[in-house]
Image: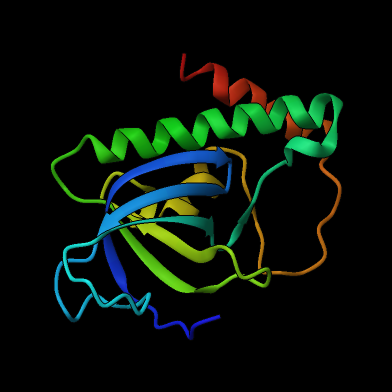
Length: 155
């Protein structure tokens, strides 16, 4: 795999895969904007981004965990869409390739997010847990219920 250089990219579109992963589109505008080591300036990139610093329930958990994972995906989609519809841009701050190699670890920045960060917005307002690569604890019933209830406030 190619080496990785952290950069900032203006997001064009972001589709939630789950609560903490997006398929993200952005343009490479000039020769300074080559963190992915692409040589064609003006090329649109589509990259899967795992949001740095958060964890939300996984789709494969089954039962209430799957229901809350679907709710987390709906929340992530709504929060990102609201930010993308504003005049101020959403910026992807890429950090590194993830341990599996197919995704980028990064955060999204916008004045619409708490403290300007999608990570902080999701932790403060939408039930995400802070996650820095350590062992994941099982989700409690109360945490799962909270995420489901928060998603209903978006409807």
